[in-house]
Length: 112
Length: 113
Image 1: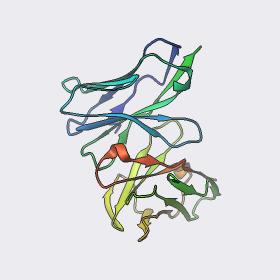
Image 2: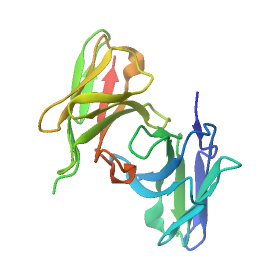
Image 3: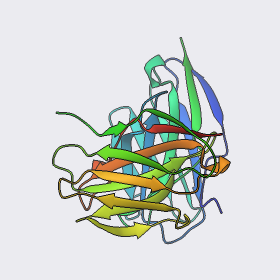
Image 4: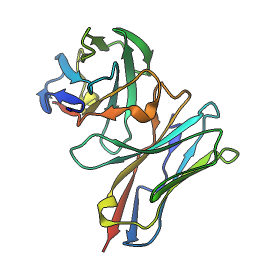
């Protein structure tokens, strides 16, 4: 049973524009959420996280928004750059030290 | 400073065989987690090792077992391989708390024929 869902397998955005990647979860016990970025032939790389006590976390061009009532989070990348082209995974955990539950990923393509 | 390393990078086995995958954590990390990523899917948690013991386990059969050594490196063993075990196996190391400190290795690609 997929507890973390990324319903858009792919997204194409022009350079300089905003990229918005969405993620939904079903388990109300999740209290820690992360986004990972993955290039081919590499392992996932941590990007940004948010705990359930917050509704927004920002780090440079990356902002994650959390809507607990809707069990939804999103990653905003502004402005998008060609180097951002990668697969982005949303992940959730019941505790900051334990197992990650991943979505299937969204492949982002940023075109010049 | 070397990150997480995994060996081998690729492996081909036949059904029924056994396989051992290896992982060396990032320097300073003492917790190792293993994930299986099937084609087109996100990584799925197999288990986590801390202080040489399995701390948490995902929904994987007993054919999947692991070990952590005193130097914090880890092995993943899979017995009686099935075609469905073909996947990318990812190792991640971290401190005991703080998932944002979790670093993933490049993975071992296992193909079962």
